[in-house]
Length: 108
Image (cartoon, rainbow, N blue to C red; front, side):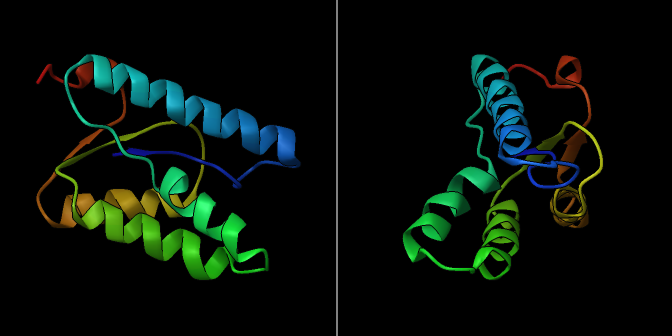
C-alpha cells in the first residue's frame, strides 16, 4: 500500500491533484520493484464522485483502512496526514512492514 497526504495540507484542488500524483508515482516505483501497489484514495474517490454528495468522510477513511487490512506492507510518503498515519497503524498492528523510503522497499 502507498499512503500519504491527499487533502491534508492541500489548500486547493491543484494541491490535492499534486498529492495524488505523488502517490501514483510512488505506486509506479513499487510496481517496478515487482509488488502490487494500492492507494486508498484511488479506491475511494470514484465512489465519492459517484455519490455526488458530501460523503467524503463516510467513504475515504473507512475504504482506506479496509484496504490496509488486506495489505502486507506500506510505503508512507509525503507530509503530515492523519489518514495515512492510520493506514500505517493498521499495517503495523498486524505485523506488516512499514517503509518510509522507496530505496528500502525490497524487490519482490
